[in-house]
Image 1: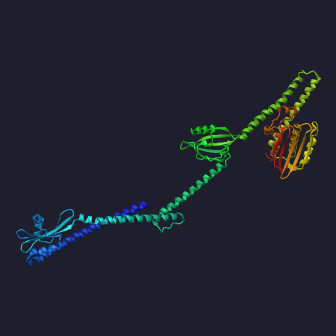
Image 2: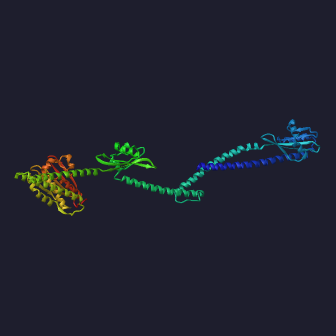
Image 3: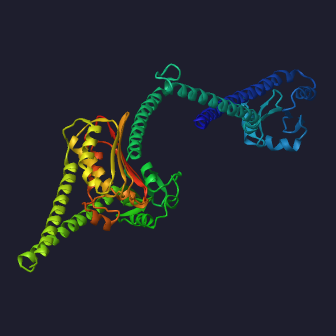
Length: 559
């Protein structure tokens, strides 16, 4: 703006200077010309009116010529002889007195000066007329030419031009500063003062209008960005955006957690985030326009990823990756597969035995009564085992599918003593001492609580040693704490995490001998979970096992 105002002001100033200079110069030159002609005419008139009264005309003319060095006086007698020339240049004047202009001047006898150019810098005005005695008087006056006058005023014009330049520069700076100050001050205020600089008021209105539009758009963009950022940051799924040159543009917390990365990787190459060959290859493929998916193992978790290209104006601009933690789904699938296999195996084994023994009896291949009784006993045992297995499976199915159950106030001390009395007979076979300590009251499903404690006590007796102990301890504070302790064989540390899985047996051979379906602790886990509780196991081989359950006093039944 400053340069533009400066150029405009300077141009206007220079044009005004040139036009005024030309006008004043020609006006001055015209005045100068008229003044020179009038001076010459006045001198001629003076000489003409006085020379006839002078006795010594030559002397008279010499005296007059002394007053003005630029005036030349030539006196010619009636025979055209040059008697006097104030410049003393007789040969030079002869060319003038023989010219047509000289003859015309003598003939007219009018004081009307003629002019001729002496050189580029001087003009000469002259006139000639006859005196009364027939002699001729020629008077000329040297004046400055128009070119010389121009050169004389040129320095002044240059000086004035410099002044105009300085004034324009200062004026433009002052004007620009004032306008900008006004604009800056006015943009910050809601009101436009048109009295200050009314010429820019339309611009100011337009600026304010555009500013309001831009502010609204920026606010909308900011809201959209914040919304997208909040959504991405709070996604359970991992999100990763990669540019075409494999630079990380955006990554959320979930993706960093899935890939077990703590450092800042924004604007860095993908190799700063992960060197997993499968992930890097999926990005390479996506940048070539092909989507892909797969599963990687990261920090003992199963992470599924989806890689897709990102297009901008029909060109691939980068790629995005989604990460989903499918550890539970994959593990659940494995458990379901194992459960199906185990159920098939556990059901098939007794059924096969029953079928085989029955076939022997049907075909009358057993003749000994003793053998028959043994086979019938085996059929009974396998049938009971099959029935127990079916009941346990149905219990687990009910627990998994049950949404609501009836709840009552349960005195856990009384319930525990009842369970102890039920298992006294089986415990006496190993001379195991059963006891209950502490008190506790809970609001829960009584059948489930009975099933939970009965399974724990039954296992504690089954895997105990001769002359061992089984103790139920009850503690009540903010929650109910139920502990079942035994002095049995214990569980190896590496197998403790799996004992609540369906059909899992710590020692397959021992479990076959001791009976059981392998579903007891799985039932306990489901009951605890459905009541919003937690279960913890502490066990040491050849020392014993403690299973501790924490339940809220007023339990809710969870799906």
